[in-house]
Every structure is written in structure tokens, then in C-alpha cells.
Image (tube, rainbow, N blue to C red; front, top):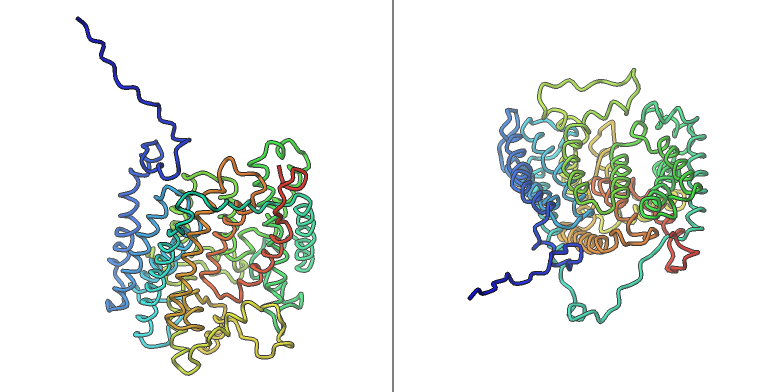
Amino acid sequence: MVTDVREPSVAPERPLLLDESQWGRVTTPRTLLSRALSVPLALGFTVFLPFVVAAQSGDGQRDAAFWLQLLLAMYAGARLSAMVLTSRRKLLQGSFWLFVYMAMGVAPLAQAVLGRVPTPVVGPRSDLTVAIGLVLLGCTAFDVGVLLARHRPAARRAGGARKEPRPVMVHRRRLQLLTLFAFLGSAAFIVKLGGPAVFFSSRQEIIAGIQEAGVSNGDGQAGQALLRGFGTVPALLALLLYTRWLITSKYARRKVSVIATTGALAALNLIVNNPVSNPRYWFLTVLFALLFTVFPVSAAMYRVALSMAVVVALLVFPFADRFRYDEKNYKPVETTSFLEPMALKDYDQIGMFANTITFSNSGPGHFYGRQLAGSVFFAVPRSVWPGKPRDTGVMVGQWMGTVNTNLSSPIWAELWLDFGPLGMGAGLLAMGYAAARVDRRYAKRATRRSPPGSLISTVVPLVAGYSFILLRGPLLQASGRVAIAGMCLALVATYRHDKGTTLR
């Protein structure tokens, strides 16, 4: 007698239909890739690069500040590795840890090894130690905020008592109005500075053009912010919205007018938002925003972007001064060590936080929201508000007696100067909470099935890119573009989902 033995029937795996909570349990090629990369990537960011930097020879002191800086670099490396290897794309959190790792971790560690800094640290060594400890405290608070964001009210967990809110969409007619406004604003910016050729010379020529335009006198920071903002932000935002429309809509790809408008906006951005005439952090904003708009659902591109950004930030950024000066005033970096460019150029955030602490301890104390008020109401002229606060970086630089007062003021220093250690911790905790909530909402919206006019799918990549400028500071310099972007987004946003109203 033959017994018919059959294998129990097993339903075929259909990963695309799995619930979000089951993704981590399925072995896909992408999962295997993540597992293969996890150990070398985590060890490279967390251990190898910090210890290679720390092992170099130099004149720096191996004291408490040095070991705290090494700990900060390793902590940021571990968190950045987690962002790269996560199953979800977390743009805002990834941008935060990328900035901390490159600007507050590895670069200051190189400075500590060599005993050289791009901006003098004028106070006692103890203020530098306190500054590094406060940065670590702020990073921990950010992570606590992310953990708190994971908590959901019982009503939501119990089974969808609340209805999912309808997404904010892009209004088609208003997008055309924004495009017109972008061309007018950029054209005025180009004419004011003397023509398109200026934008391909150097940043020095751009600054000279702004001075000749008469907006750098008196309340010059607000004038420069508005001129640059209206000339660059609407053009970039219109390009992002049209690009997403083309990427996600067959209807748009069949419309000659949409393709032609996108091409014209790309040419306009090539003039006003190119890397030659713009600060490197603004170009990084443009690059990140375009990258994640063109590849809205690619986890591989997200991982490559965060990983390669470390290489670009630490090895390419220090040499980007080639575009800051003209041929006569440019002095090439001469170095025999890969650490020296990081010690000589741009990464002054830790040192400026220490100088801010020394400045506060020398008499002024904390400002209790005054600096933040100046950033929020940046557009109010000093003739109306005589006591309007100055840019924090400029204020501390003038107190230090430096010739160049275009200095950074990282968000840690801004919050600490206004609200003290507890206020700084609370502010970064709120930032972590908000970043985690927005990242979760973005992960739900930025899918292949999301409508072309979903505004969050464009806004989050833009904010992720601009967060480098917000984190670096000063806030007053960053406020102009934030306000203009908010105006542009308010113009195109709509809650109506009619086919004739929104993008399709």
C-alpha cells in the first residue's frame, strides 16, 4: 500500500502586500544587502574613522575635552549607521545625524588632534569641555524625543477610531502662479547683480554685487536674506514640484507644457542655485532636495546619499573655497595630512559654541528668548525696532574682535544662549519628537501610490536639506529663506482634491 505524502500547502510570499510591521521578517535582496553592509558600515562610522583620526600625530592635548570629542564622534557614528541601515527612510533624522557626525564629531576631533582650529577659541579649556558635553546632552535629548514619538494614544492602537487626515495637495493653478513668481524673482535678482555671468564667477563677486545693489547697508542682513531668498527659493521650490509631477504622473509626461516648464526651471536654477556662487550648505540643500524628489521611494539611493555625504563633507567641502574667491584672491590649500583641511576650513561649530559659553559667562548671561525673537521677526527693520538683536555669530565674533564675523552659531549654542542647559535639552527633545513624527508621516505618503500633488513628498526632502543650514546657524541668517519658503508653500497648498484643482 502506497501512502500519498504531500507537503503542506504554503501560500507564496508576497512581500509587496505585507503589513508595514512585517517588513523586517522577510528576507529580500534588499534585506540581505543591509545585513551584508551593517557590520562594516557600523564599524567604519563608529570605530574605524574616529580612531584613525584620533591615532594621528599632532599638537593637541589628550585631556577630558579630547576624550569627550572622541565619544561624541563614536556616538554620532553609531546613530548615523542606524539611519543608513534602517528599513524606513528617515530623512530628517538622517540629516540631523549626518550633520552631527561630520560637523560636530569627526572634524572637531581632527582639530583636537592637531591642536588647530578654523576660528580661535578665546576662553579657557574648560569652556570647550562644557560645550562638547552639552552637545552630547543635546544629542541624547534628541534621541529621547524620537523614542517618545513612538508612543501612540490607546485609541489609535485599538483600531482606527480616528480617521486618517486627507493629505495637503498642490493646487495646479497656484503652482503656475508660483512659477511665474519664481521667474520674476530670479530675473530681478540676476538683473540686480549685473547679469548671469556674475553667478559663474565666484561668491566674492556675488557679495560685491549685493553691496552695490544697496541692500547691505544699515540692516543689511535682512536685506541680503530677502534678496537672495526671493531670487533662489521660489525657483527651487517650483522646480521640485514640477519634477515630482513628472516623476509620478503619466499625464504630466504627455504634456509638452509641463516638460517645457520643468526644463526652463532647471535652466533658471542652474544660474541662481549653482554651486559656484552659492554657499556650500545651500547647494547641499538643493542637492538633497532634488535627489529625494527624483528618487522618492528608493531605499538604496537614501543609503548611498547618507554614506557618500560623509565623504563629500569631510574631503570635498574643505576644498570648496575654490569657488568662494576669484583667481587673484584664491589661495589653494596646501596640506600633507588629510586632517588639516578639516582643521582649517568651515567646521567651527564646536569652537563657536565654546566661545558663546565664554561670551555669556563674561557678563551678558542668557537672553531668555531675545535672540530667537530676532530670528522670528527678522524682517522688521531696525528703524522700527532699534533694539533688534544681532546675528548670534556676528555678536560673538564682534565680542571676540575677529575681522571676519561670518561665523556659525549651531542650534545647540542658540538654544543654550537663550534658555540655558534645560531649555537647550527641551528644544532638542522637541526637535527629535517632531523629526520622528514627520519622518513617519513621510514614509506613509511617499509611496508609488501617493498622488503627484502630495505636498509632503516635496516639503520633507527640502526641509531635510535645509536642516544643515538650520543646525549650523546662525538662525537669523537662515530665517529669510524659511519665511519665503513658507509663503510659497502656503500659496500652492490646498485641502481640496478635485481633479481639476490638483495635480494629476
